[in-house]
View 1 (cartoon, rainbow, N blue to C red):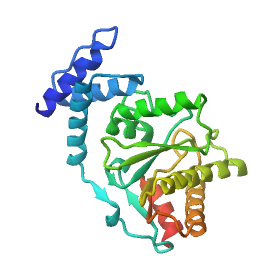
View 2 (view 1 turned 90 degrees about the vertical axis):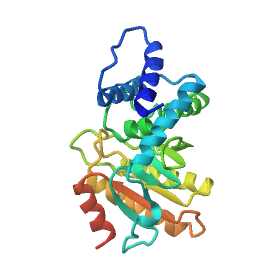
View 3 (view 1 turned 90 degrees about the horizontal axis):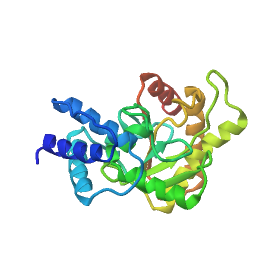
Length: 262
């Protein structure tokens, strides 16, 4: 199968699960967008081995077609040789774990084609990621608490694992309280603890809570740098050799550079 044939097969499989008729577009770009949309809205549940095999072939091909970046290509910052900054797409990082900033349901973003980090990571990893998260949540029996963290495989990502954490949500335009600051720090610290538990060496964080959760970017970066620096200092025997702060916007890049390079 070429990639268009793979997409056609996956589309037909997902559409067959629905109660409504969906016309498949004629051009590849629109087909691929529809496939991502259907993956985004699909509830966790079993699917055929053939679907998973072909989905994995497609997503692995797409991952390998990206400009992947390994942790040893990330330059350490001036203030800490174990901390680096990466300006780009977190799903292109070849690290032991990337961190997903998710909501309390832990099932990924169900909004088709939404550009939040939760959606981007699930879309690149494959539908197995939501299935694994659902198993965790079913066993847990309640929503994930703010500041906690869970770990799953990375599936079709270049990262081996995904660590899922829920950061604090603020009302837009408000300043974080001390409690919210401590909860945000907990998201970083508990993610690092999981990385240590699994003996991981490299981990990349997005800017937790700064998107739809409205945490001010400068305050969030300060809390992140403080939490990670303290953890590394207080745990000299950690397995972690490099913590990467992934930033997507120029504004965030300048904030982290100011905090870690000056």
